[in-house]
Length: 246
Ligand SMILES: Nc1ncnc2c1ncn2[C@@H]1O[C@H](COP(=O)(O)OP(=O)(O)OP(=O)(O)O)[C@@H](O)[C@H]1O
Image 1 (cartoon, rainbow, N blue to C red):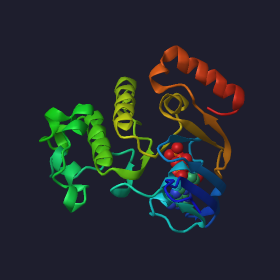
Image 2 (cartoon, helix red, strand yellow):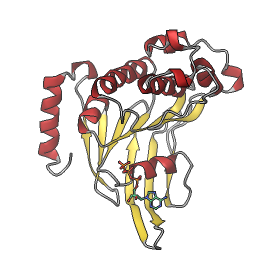
Image 3 (cartoon, helix red, strand yellow):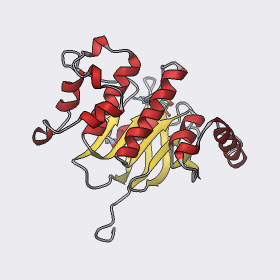
Image 4 (cartoon, rainbow, N blue to C red):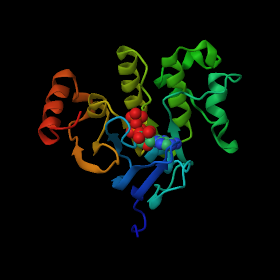
C-alpha cells in the first residue's frame, strides 16, 4: 500500500502475454516484464523492433485484457490516461481546437488553452481542419489534445516516426517544453536511443522478444544541457553499460 499523500507510481508486472499466429503457432510477446515509473517522471521503454513495446502500451490502455499479471496506473489528474500514437488520430470534420476540446470532459470543455496552443506553436492553426495540416502539425495537435486532458499518465507510442529528422527534433523539443510546463508521468515507447537519451529521466531497456527488462539507465543530466556533445557522451556511457543494445 502507498502511504497516504504519496502519489502512486505506474507499476507493471506482466507475467506473460502470448499471441496465436494465423498458422496457430503461439508467440510469446512478453514474459516476466516488471518495471515502475515514478510520479512525474518521463520514462522511455527502449527495445528492438518487435520486442513487445506496443503490446505493453495496449495492455496499459486497457485495449488488450488477454494477459497474465497485473498493473497499477497512477492516481489523480482530470483524466486517468492519455495516449499519443504513431498516427495522430484526429477527427477530419473538426478543427484543431475542436479536436482538442472534444477530448475534455464536458465540465472542462471551455477551459483556457491559449498557453498550450502557444507553447506548441499552434495558435494560428486552431481553426484549421486536419486535412490542412502537415504531418508534423497534426502530431502537435495530438500532443495538445493529450496534455489538455491533464492525464495522470501519458503514454506515447513512437510519436515522432515517419517525420524528417528536423521536424522530429523540433517536435521532441516542443514535447519537452510542454512537459516542463505541466510535468506529467509519462511512458514513451521508442527504438531510437538518441531520442530516449534526449527526453527521458530514465530509460527502461528491454530485451528482444519476449520483452524483459535488461536494466534501467538513469539520466541525471538536466535536459537543457543535453546538446549534441553531451548526447554523444551519453550514447557512449549507455553502450558501456548495454554493449549489445541500440
Ligand atoms: N495481434 C497479433 N497477433 C499475432 N502476433 C502479434 C499481434 N500483435 C503483435 N504480435 C507480435 O508480438 C510481437 C510484439 O509486437 P509489438 O508490436 O508489441 O512489438 P514492438 O516492440 O512494438 O515493435 P515495433 O518497435 O516494431 O513497433 C511481435 O512479434 C508481433 O509480431
